[in-house]
Image 1 (cartoon, one colour):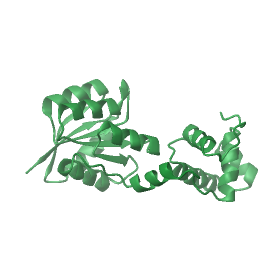
Image 2 (tube, rainbow, N blue to C red):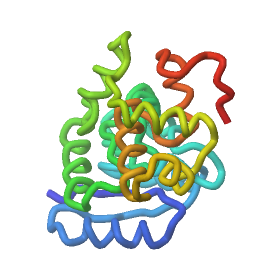
Image 3 (cartoon, rainbow, N blue to C red):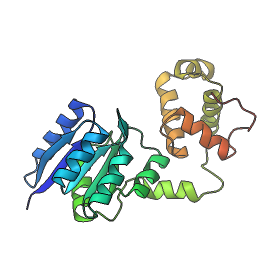
Length: 213
């Protein structure tokens, strides 16, 4: 039996790449595409595909609007949220909106296809590679444990310094600085600098008096 798929992403190249990944599988067929929230809701409710793969950031709104609308339209549709901004808050927002799976855009195509298959088979469950760690971070009152170097980088980020400035200040390479920042984002469940700093403030990892940019 063929599983039908709808793709909702405003970048044509991403849709094309996803379409090719799905069409390599004999049991999956892309039957519709959309580049906006309004178009995705219209196409999704008209076609009622087995699975909808939805980007979070679209020109006319948030992809979660699509998730809620499609979930209201069909309780049994599998809905995969695919996003470049895969922080903890985005994950929990997708879960609460009724998504079946949450996958970062950096994931390999095979992982996205696997998420679509899971969503089709179990639309009422929720799958995410980072779910267990995100739950631990949410339930941990003491917050994550940062290394001394990560703490230095965090304070420099709070001071408004960029990658090159932090590298010069700490006498390390830009790639090493980027690695520390990436590790900080992972530990704080953040998708960007602003989220990381706000989470660090809330957890007491930065003094409340810090002037966070």
